[in-house]
Length: 247
Ligand SMILES: C[S@@+](CC[C@H](N)C(=O)[O-])C[C@H]1O[C@@H](n2cnc3c(N)ncnc32)[C@H](O)[C@@H]1O
Image 1 (cartoon, rainbow, N blue to C red):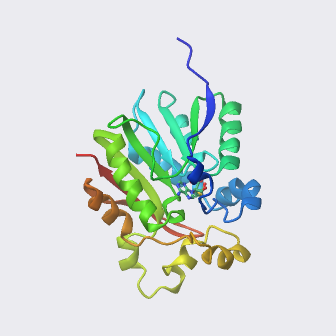
Image 2: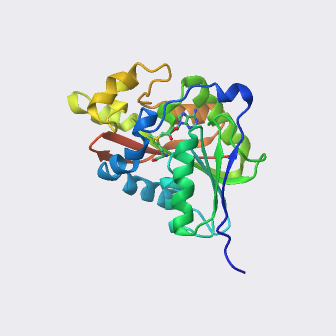
């Protein structure tokens, strides 16, 4: 049977959600055309490849990529495991259209859903993996807690969540006294060009460094064995890979 190469974008936003603010990938909507170039220079592709390797996705498994933006993590999943069934979720319609164009050029199947991290487009216990890269620092505290609870709902027992984002427990310890590895919004915004950082930091949905927040978030939602599994240093700061299993 020929592999499907269907690429589609579904808008799952409610009328209220259409008014909801979000922090775009490059901080400002007009910077979106430069997002892939910024992140390529920043070495983000290797982070995606490492996240996919850590997730260990098998043929036929269902994967949701939360805050997928221009689709690079989703496409890395499909490059490593062409048999996976991948859905990318993001509130940014323009980023999703870019993701769709790239998927069509590569001839891979990808479902893209316009919506927010707290409402994962999947039936209860239907997903094998939830993955997310550099996105949760764009989501406010209530949204991140709701994301963790919804990931637990959507994953099957034994399903895994794999997240890569700024900060982490070990980076707190190792970076003590190192002024280049501070925490807070300025640190979390290092992937943006310098002139953008202060404007974004004052956004109502300002980006943040989680510290140990992602592990705590997943544990509080009911995931077992939530923990840091790897770290990587990039020009824009240190990132941590966190994984947890749905009991
Ligand atoms: C820095 S980009 C990361 C994009 C992609 N995951 C990557 O690794 O290149 C952050 C993404 O989070 C998205 N985002 C912002 N608020 C969100 C929310 N509440 N729920 C889901 N995604 C959100 C942005 O639109 C943006 O595409």
